[in-house]
Image 1 (cartoon, helix red, strand yellow):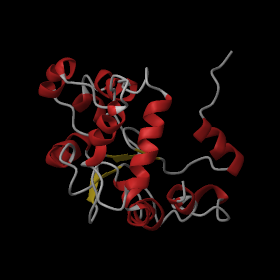
Image 2 (tube, helix red, strand yellow):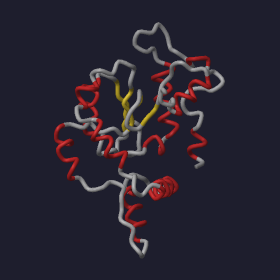
Image 3 (cartoon, rainbow, N blue to C red):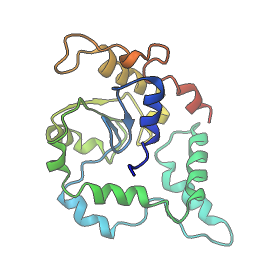
Image 4 (cartoon, helix red, strand yellow):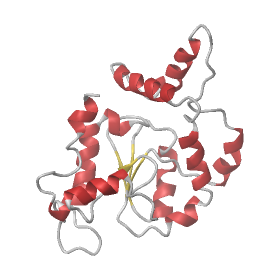
Length: 207
């Protein structure tokens, strides 16, 4: 029995889209906040402290600790995003580290694997992202693809600057001529009624 199709694929099927860009933080044709994992990072990964896991304490101080883990990523006035992060982390306390662990497990030989990606890719980074920005050029060289640096933001830049993030993606994948193409793709797959990336921006901002 074949495995179930991922939700994103099912959504594309329902819209009649055979092709189209996919935005993702750690994988997909659009990469955001993805650090270049080299030999040094692989060696240090087993000894690194937990990123999001905290031990529950009777006085509730672990909630402040969890908040402070990500507070430096956000500006004053972005507390709603931090609220969502704390809620998400508390809903899966025993699994909250799995995403970070998977990044290091999957990218054991990142530089070698990136060379096999043939689809158009855009690596997007934020100027305050001290994890990804220092290695952005190294990442781009290994990938052999383009990069873009937004005007502001930190690790959660798509959440902080959703409009600019969508504009960068739309221009690259819908307005520019992609390799091998003879003109801008526009809205592929007959999805004119749906529009390019950014249609759910208001929904995301209103969460």
